[in-house]
Length: 327
Image (cartoon, rainbow, N blue to C red):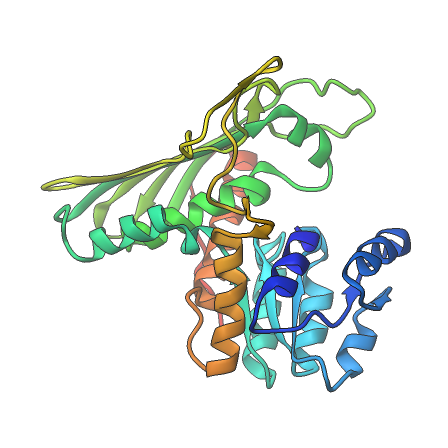
């Protein structure tokens, strides 16, 4: 994701790429050489450079807190990849730093820049479907992702964070309580740490709404697409339904049928376009124009709070209340 972000910045008329930061010196050197910029092993050099206005933090979610907080304290605007953090405590601490620092923070919930989800949110807000009654959101990807992410992240933070945000944003109602169950199978490689493969959660939302969340890395690796997601909000007079199984391009070759990504970060005419480019350029434009970000910090914290409640529910085998943002 960091390389994609770097490329979007180089292709944007709104900013210039200043440097690459990565603790992996070989990776940093390779990427920085490709883009013709210097590289550093930590954010210290960026924090001290008065010519650097902003930074994009695209590291594993378990490592978000330190670089994001240090950059914010140094007065740099920060685009922080979702999820905001891997724990509710870390998310709250980042939010507190953002509130007390001279800079600004935006969490990259990419579906806010997807025209399908944004269109659904707009129709619900306009009252087109009447009063929302219930909502279902799901997202599944390849099993190989689970093997790659074992011990590094969970379906909650790698996948479900998208749909937790979408469920609350599109419906206009916050999740208040969850009851969750996890599905776990033996890892193909016994040396890998065990991990949940899929999670299913029944949700209570404000004003009596009910919801279901489903996400995991359980699709066979030969499935035509690793982006299999859906959102449906049903109201008293209608519904909105977002289905991402097919982006409009089908390719059949000797290895089978594939459904390439046509919306999130496809390459068109040698440029990255779509949701990611829109997200990064919104971040840059909003900094330049001193406007409000589309993703409020409180929303990003609450999304992590829902994940926190889901994890607690899996452990307790009981419904768990979602703790509200405390800042």
